Image 1 (tube, helix red, strand yellow):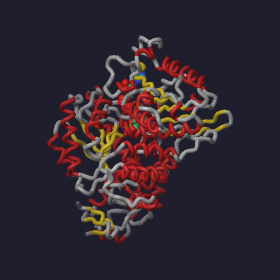
Image 2 (cartoon, rainbow, N blue to C red):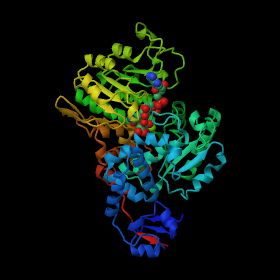
Image 3 (cartoon, rainbow, N blue to C red):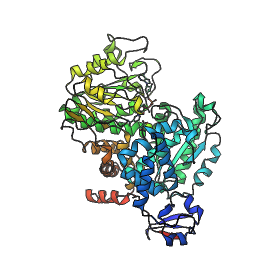
Image 4 (cartoon, rainbow, N blue to C red):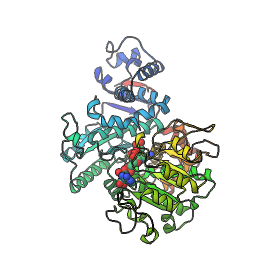
Length: 570
Ligand SMILES: NC(=O)c1ccc[n+]([C@@H]2O[C@H](COP(=O)([O-])OP(=O)(O)OC[C@H]3O[C@@H](n4cnc5c(N)ncnc54)[C@H](O)[C@@H]3O)[C@@H](O)[C@H]2O)c1
Ligand SMILES: O=C(O)C[C@H](O)C(=O)O
Ligand SMILES: [Mg+2]
């Protein structure tokens, strides 16, 4: 590679000169290059004479950012900065994390995905086409990255992006957005990460009909072709980058589950929507349950939207109930899962294999009201009959927690826990102001997208954001520091408990999860818990000596910071 980090000397060494330096976002520092660096790197005269400090650059960039008229324009501005000067991008993002996360990530990233082929400026990451599997290796090698150079790969096929569905190649933006959160929150070194788009086609007709659409102009391929492409991708990626954690994002439900089941015991991989969402949801439930004063084992849970996220959520709740002393059957019986044709019930046609374990016995629901339009027992009836104390939305159906449903739930339970996890904002199952109004301020709330605090009868309610962003950065960092080669259930459970330790929802109006503004601190504890769990589960290759301080020191030392390192022309 032209540019290499020399850890012994603590400096970047590069053979690049002149415009090639300015064109490389990992190398470029624009007006902050010193006169000496400019001479050594052949930049004299290629940047304006004045040398700025990073503080000055950050202040200017922040002004430019604030001057953008819309959230999408802000996203495009930050993407351009990311593609021009990566260190400055992370300096700015880190300094204004709570303000900018909704721009580079949920919810604005959803708009950026939909507009991808129109707002396109520069390529990001690696695009692999199902039509040319023979190019996978060549394309990955073209990044110049070698076997020791990659810690993390985020990959999507763009089929089930957030809750907005199939946007094909535009999905690259969620991979880039997730990586930005990994670095901003956990200090994952951005030069050691890769965003990958697996272009297997799109079923969105408006994209196929659009000459400007930048992805493959054909429908999604059949399962046999898909699976063989995935197999090649995983085989080649784990051979070329043997240390890298392979993160899956926003695949269609059947593919997400099948890939996770097939590979989680064979390679270093995990699925954010299934496992990350399960972990952040469990953390919020633990925080909320503490505030209710009722033990977890006495709660009843209804999950609306039994797809990738919903069943991931159910699985981790069930595991937590088993750890608290229930049998697996008793734990499963605490969960009612509702999908597009109503409550999952035994014998129902068309259930997906991963849903079947939550299907309720037909005898239990024989008297429950059936709705012909839904084609089964609707959510309102499930809430009435099952009397949940916890209601979770992962359906991508905005507004589906209606006033009637919420009031029915709240009539029976002192502190209902209600989580509208669907993204982006307009797809939230309910908005916090309504939930508080309908429950007289008694609801313990979390949402997947960020919401402003709500005033209700003299109390200010801070709304917890139950987004997997609270967990995946720490999970990745902890796993990398431990030199893990698998992601285990023990590591995921450790994540949820570490996050939950950061909340105290006993104060009126306090959120049931730690705030995004404190993401970096939460992340360190998550990473420490994950690294320890990896050792306990026997999947860590780097054995720490066991004391807390040491693990934490190792975690902190592994974190990358957005400062310009010394640079040497070689
Ligand atoms: N907060 C978070 O961290 C987080 C994480 C992952 C996903 N999500 C959100 O959850 C939502 C679902 O994501 P996913 O990846 O699980 O998608 P998915 O497509 O796998 O699952 C959605 C499920 O909802 C069901 N559904 C659709 N219409 C329905 C209806 N009218 N009634 C009941 N169920 C219905 C579908 O059949 C499917 O099973 C998205 O909005 C996504 O943004 C949030
Ligand atoms: O991307 C997010 O904001 C969370 C989650 O992964 C989702 O798909 O919605
Ligand atoms: Mg996702």
